[in-house]
Amino acid sequence: MMMERIPILQIGEFLLVTIQVDMHDQLALSLQDDLSAKIEKSGARGVLLDISALDMVDSFIGRMIANISAISSVLSARTVVVGMQPSVAITLVELGLTLPGVQTALNAERGMAMLRSNKPREGSGNAGRKH
Image 1 (cartoon, rainbow, N blue to C red):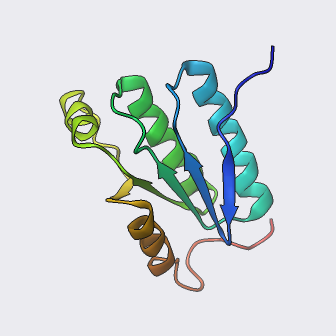
Image 2: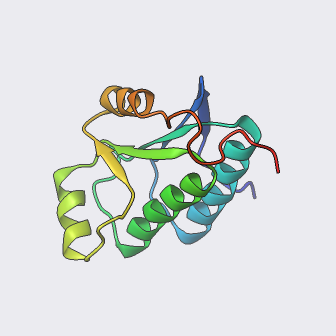
């Protein structure tokens, strides 16, 4: 049986992840692994996480979004979540998930603009430095 995977597309220095299926634990964990490997390999500076196809979330999905953002951040990439439906936003608030460090935008176009405009300033952090 082939394990399903969520595709990660590279657009310039950004990665695009579109979640169009119901997430289950194993799929979410493989996405986190795949994404961290892809960020490291590609040197991506940002991740656009499109959740417009999700009309329901639970605390697990909320934590996964927060984890993806945290992993990206550690690897010097920013995460912008786009396409969040009002019902999803309400559910996340009701679950008490504030998603610290997660930026949101209305749609993919605005999310990309946000990633482009907020590139880290030269000399900030250790992006690009080999250890």
